[in-house]
Image 1 (cartoon, rainbow, N blue to C red):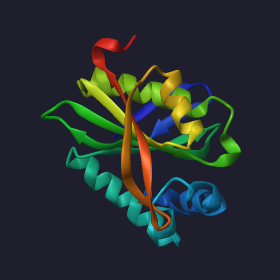
Image 2: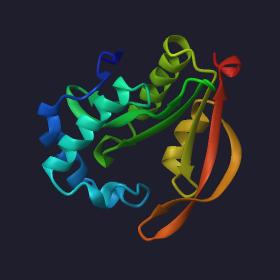
Image 3: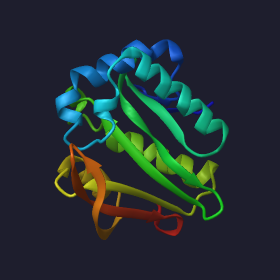
Image 4: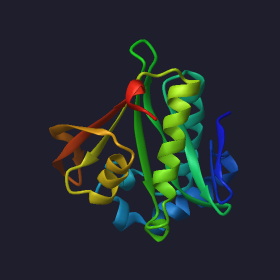
Length: 179
């Protein structure tokens, strides 16, 4: 099971099914904030949906398809981070992340992504990490840019969010570029 202590206040680890209520509460109180950028938010309508999400995360991890973990700040669930997809044949991991609005501005996501990068390159032996961020999602883009991902350009209408297509910026970081 994936567990990574980032610093004294920050832990990234796979979630437990027993934390389904905490996950749902975080999503529910941040619903308006999250659904601007994330297509799945409207599908998580109950604690049962959060439970299914956690169980699916374990299945996908066991099948080496993805890695999904909770971000715990001072022992409180702050968000989710992971590799939405893992392609071991081509050594590519696609990073995804989100966090509750009340946790913004504390450096939590930048530190969490930095830790995930280290895990991807050191432990998973990946060569390329990539992530997509909506063109207008400046906080998400800032995380990628602070961590020196390369902006590879705009992927037009790459995701369907709130009934309309959304353009996204594709960022990448190669193992040889990582310090």
